[in-house]
Amino acid sequence: MASPTSIKLDDNLKERIQHLAEERRRSAHWVMREAISQYVEREEKREAFKRDTLKAWEEYQRTGLHLTLEEADAWLARLEAGEDAEIPTCHT
Image (cartoon, rainbow, N blue to C red; front, side, top):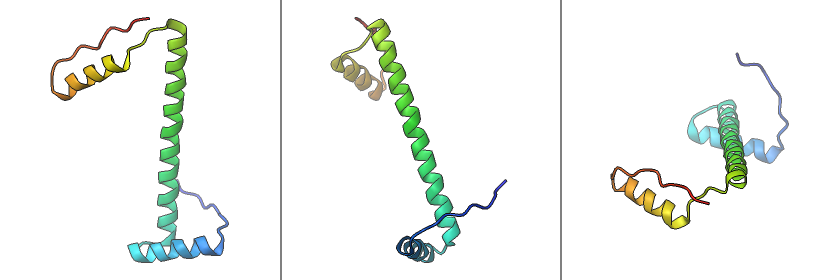
């Protein structure tokens, strides 16, 4: 369910949004909603990536298991070539 929200924009930004809306044959409301939606989605993905990175770093610090760049590169190359590539064994 949508509910109204207000936002203060400086005149320059408001004019830019209106111009873009006219160019796209959309309403300024649509442009702002789309911009906010895309921003939130991008930032949520960024936060998820950051959480995953920290989790992987903590796992590495706990276990010491890792692959070298060369091992990971070779594995990805086999996958890209369509080969049935087993996941390499991590080592300490």
